[in-house]
Amino acid sequence: MTVIKISEECHGFIGIAKDIKNAFAFLLKDKWINENTEIYDDDGEWKTLEDVRIELEFDTLLETLLFLYNNDDYFLEDQFWFSEEVIIDYD
Image (cartoon, rainbow, N blue to C red; front, top):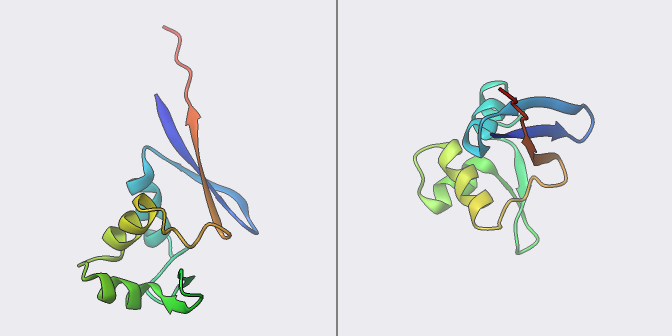
């Protein structure tokens, strides 16, 4: 079984999630990320996550983050790091 380890630039390790969707949900729920979070796009512009959500026509910030992450357009990479960790379970 694998989990996603979540780390933040200044705080280091901040949580573990069962998958990337739950990692982003945690960041949103615990207010590490919100609609005013600024991201840097490919054009060199700063945009709020809400602006990107509207531009991409998604209903939620979670959908927006997952789309950006899955399409290699994840612009929070200097602030948050996700690593896949193996949980060892010997019966």
